[in-house]
Length: 219
Image (cartoon, rainbow, N blue to C red; front, side):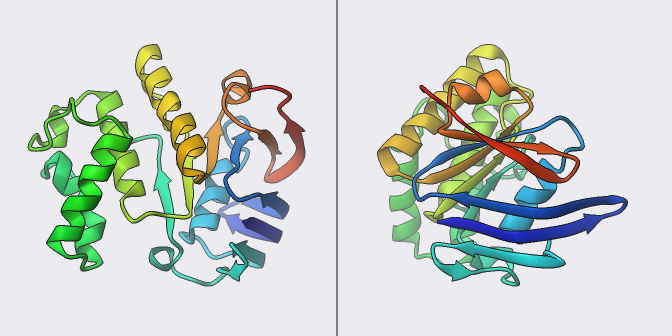
């Protein structure tokens, strides 16, 4: 599904080097490392925000190495929700669909599907996102990332600033999403124990390299 071959990318004085990784279709994969290990740079390179200086990115049998982000069919959720504060919940979720010229009927249908899938019915879709709690904002960010039915979802410490209850709710949604919809997920976290309770395998990053991959015995 996701194959990285000898990937290398520099950013300032930091370098990703010799990254080789295979993530199978429908897998929930974790990426662990301390601050500065290169996790975010690697995810952004997979997403196409950065083009690798060496190596290849393949997804679902297709090489995407030089393809722009909007053509990769990848959803991305950052540590901060990065929503449009002047827009409503619904407008944020459907923003990408409108930009891709989906019909109004299709947008309405997809919005209704996401409300059910992510249990968003307790959030007023007319509200501006500035009125939401941190956990609600991340739910909306996840819904926006899923709106275009991506093959892959990348999440960069999405629960970092959430309280414990909101964190548990968010991660429960991710597990349910992976199990029900078989969406391939890569989740970054600096908490190894947290990842062990969620994912199938964990890649350990250090100084711009994946130094090993741990199998999770039980989830």
